[in-house]
Image (cartoon, rainbow, N blue to C red):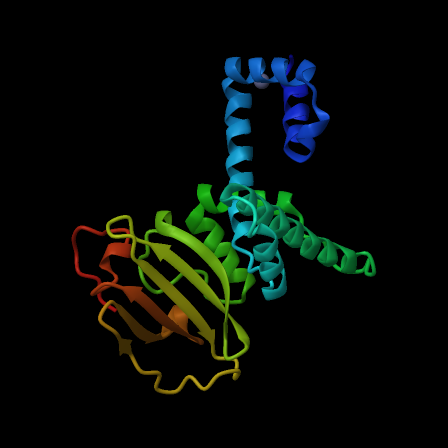
Length: 245
Ligand SMILES: [Zn+2]
């Protein structure tokens, strides 16, 4: 079997395994055992499906359905009941999904998310984290760099968070040392928020520090929220040097 056929049957097996006879599954499995690329793909697909399946099992079962299943299962043995519950929950989750899809039929005017663009954006974030962040900041009409020397290899997220119902740009870094996070909220001085005298804050694990932008950073109030004592572990120069605010 060729890789292209293997890919095709892999996807078919995923959605309609019962359609495939042994005349296909045998060569497919043979190919998978000999082709590392397709095997890796099969593995990725099945672990994704497993994760989805366990998420579906976690869907709450409506009280009535649970009671009916219980009554029905009373005379049965455990495995059968679990299987039934699983199938019922899966069917329920599928029907919820279906309802959701059904609504989609009525509107043709909404924008359609394009996974390809997401892939390109994530590639760029991975390959040029600092440059792409600068571009992103500029596109938000913000100063093109943060006032602190963050290590952009630690960048995990940039986007928005709702604060009092309004979207605020946020950039998140993650420390390789202890898995801690540093979140930077950027509040432009555009009148949407009262930014006067924002107070620093602290709990036992997390601190918030406020920096009102000066000079190149004028016009923005930065709130740095981070785990740990200080921000040093998120900086480019992690192991030495004192960084002034
Ligand atoms: Zn292959």
